[in-house]
Length: 258
Image (tube, rainbow, N blue to C red; front, side, top):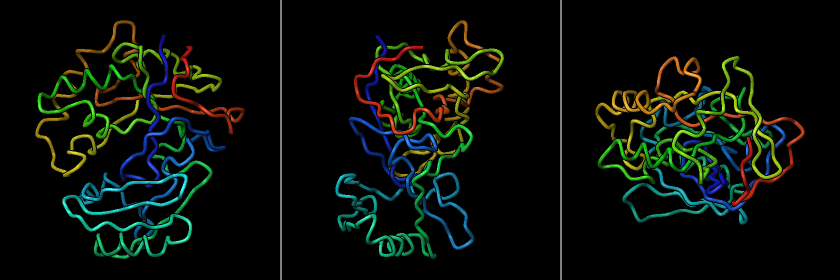
């Protein structure tokens, strides 16, 4: 039976993720701690991997219970740890030094800072999907694919591209359950430049998008609503979360029902 095999949250937008065993849903639909913080420049523009490939060189480790983050530069040994609640100015100063211009660190405990504020719930993908995508690129393993696409919830016991079946022709939202929590499948997630880059170095893989599109088209499951794919540079499912689900918790091992 399909079940929840991984839960990943990304406490600071565009930085490394944290694997957790359970996660509570916020009022705004996001998982607690997911994209809770984001970096901004002085003009109020978010600093993320879409626009700033240098961010790939930042490594981070989070202690969600202790509310700390340890940051360092890829390939360097000097690490600094900051309290996320008490030392935000010092942490912002570290980022400012790294980027070479003033950086602000902002927090949102309502829904975090998702790319899609309309479908602000967790993104969903099957483990078999990630394995299949990895098979398209000989030098890539599943962990690298996972880091490139940064989904929140990974479903085991389901076939590759299982999540593509969560759409209907009318475009209506499709409810499905993870344990006791109801999510609404919103749309296939349209991808940006980020998955074309190595998640550790930021180096772009030549023809990644072209090769991905060709394989994605060829592997679209029979019966999937093709109208939801005006192009094939899409992977994982965006979700919306009914207001009734706020405060509920999903856990590893929860079974999936559509």
